[in-house]
Length: 327
Length: 167
Image 1 (cartoon, rainbow over the protein chains, first blue to last red):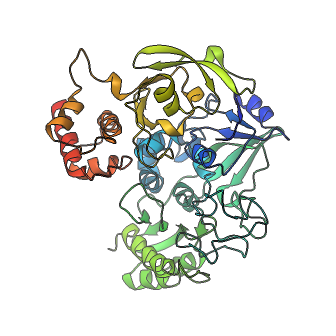
Image 2: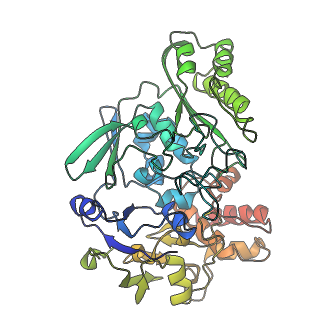
Image 3: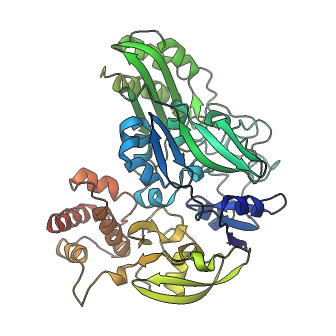
C-alpha cells in the first residue's frame, strides 16, 4: 500500500473539516472496498478519515417510512425485522450482497459508493479513463463480459456493480448529504452520473460531502416485490444481471411499477419502457413476456457481453412473474 | 469498546494502539497502513489467522470482532483499536478444543488445512447469528470462506453437527 495518514473524526463537523478542500482525504467506514483499492494501488488518498465514531448507525421505521443511518452495517439492515417486513426488496438484495463477513463490515453509505469491478479499473498497470483520465479504455475491445450494456460512452463502459442501490431506487430512496454549508436531500437516482467524457466523476457529490442517511418513503409494493440476481456462482458474487421489481397492485391490476436493473448499466438502470408497458395493465404471463422482451431496448452491447441482453429480458420476465405471484 | 479516550483526531501515519486479542491487551506501534491481519500475524505472531487473497475474497483471515465475523485483511489495525478480537488461538478453553474444532476433526473437514482457521471462525460466527442449520443455510452463510481442496461436503457436515450439539 502507498503511504497515507489517518485520523478519526469525533463528529460530523470534524469529519467534514478533515475532508475539506485540498486535504486529499477519503472517508473510510467499513473499508471493504477501500482496502481492496488501496491494496491494489488503484487509489492513493493522502489521508483516510475514519467516520466510524459518528452516530449514524441506526435504523428508524415510523409510519411506514424508514431512515437508515449511513454507517449501519449491511447485515444489520438485512436482519432488521422492520426492514424485512416493510421493505422486503431491500432485505432480499442485501442478503444476496457479498459475503457474511463483508456484510458485517460494509456500511450503507459506503456500499452506495463502491467502485466498479471493471477488470481494467482494478488493474493499476493498464490504462483506464476512470482511474487515469485520458489514458484510454481497454475494456471496449477487451475483456468486457462484466461490463455495461447501457449508459456507456466511448471513454468508459464500466458497470455499476452493487445490489442495494438497485433495490433502493426501485423503492424511491432519497439520501441526506452533509457538507460544511449544511444538509441537502437528493434522490438516490440522482447520485449517479453517466460516464460521458468524465468517467472519473461517478457521483454528484462534491468533494468532501458525506452521505449521512438513506430515506425510504412508505412502500406500497411490499407484497409484490422481488430481487432477482443472476451470477456466475450461487453466492458471494457480483451480478451479471440483477432486477429489482416493485409493483403496486390491486388484484392482478398494476397501479404502478418500478423496475431497476443492476450489472447492466454504468449506473443502476431504470427500465422506464418496461414500467410503461406494465402500468395500468393486468399482470398476465403474456404481459410479463412482452415487458421482458423490451427490457433490452436501447442496449449497446460489446463483443463479450451481448449475452446480457437476453439474460436481462428473461430476468425481468421471471422477476415480474415472481413479484406478481403469477409464477 | 474503549477507544474514545485516545481518538487519533489529528492526521498521522504512525500510532500507538491497544489491540485486545483473545482477552489480552497488547500495546503496539503501527503504521496507518498496517492491516489487522498484518498486526495479528507479523506483530503479535498469531499466525493461525491466514493470509489468502488479501482482498476479502477467500475468508482465510476470518476473525471475530466484538463477536461478529469479519475479514482481518479488509480492516486497518488502527480501526480495530479497543475492540475485542478473537482469533483461532483464542477459542480452545482450558486445553479443550472448541466444539467447532472438535467437529472439524471428527468430520475430517479439511485436506491441506490452510483455510481451516477461517472456516472455523466463520462457522462460530454463523452459529452466533442464529440463522438455522439446514444444509442450504450453512452453505449460503459459509460462502465467504473458500476451500481450494474442496472439503466443502465435510465442512457442512461439521458445522451441522456442531450446531446440533450447540442447540
